[in-house]
Length: 245
Image 1 (cartoon, rainbow, N blue to C red):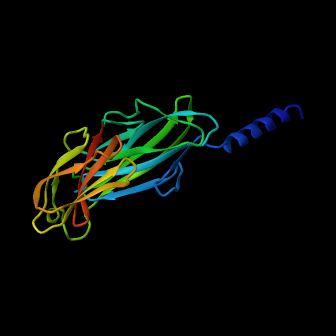
Image 2 (image 1 turned 120 degrees about the horizontal axis):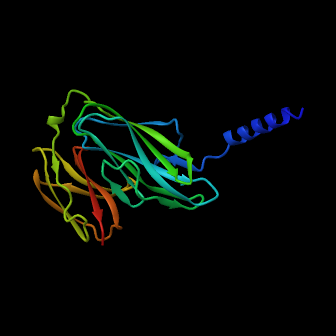
């Protein structure tokens, strides 16, 4: 019986560890819980300039966490690249672990993460895993896998719906940001500006087939935004923009 007791104690300890609450939880923008086995599909076409994945990160522990983000390029098409925005900064494609950590109090949620996939006009499938962890608790991490798919849809090709959009300037912008654009003749265009969590903060109709539009950004908070050119309801180009008053 004395030999059996340590074994039973070990089994009990492993059972408790197996059911311990994970310290970091991930959610999509609809509030759905994303587990480590979740596979998200972010679908576009070869003409999609940028596919953006938004993830909300929550500290579900009873102590503060300093959370880093990490990307794992499981399978990446040639001429494509993946970048991350986290902890107040966006990092170039050669950064795989965020240099900065986001400190979250118990129960606090951060809505600022985005994983950005630049398609490079390629057709096919790329697979990327995003991991979130605290250096003090490296084994208590959370992750999701994203399948970025870019396949042509229908008979209508990219060439029939084209348009160009410059990056906003000046960048960073203060009170105003200007964009140069071009549209196919007879098509309706819009400039759509979204914040880091994907909410639309500005929508401007583009009346001419080409030209320049200036948007008043004085009322927008400092931070990172995404400016998209929509042609007949289809986003054909997306650019990052920083606002700093």
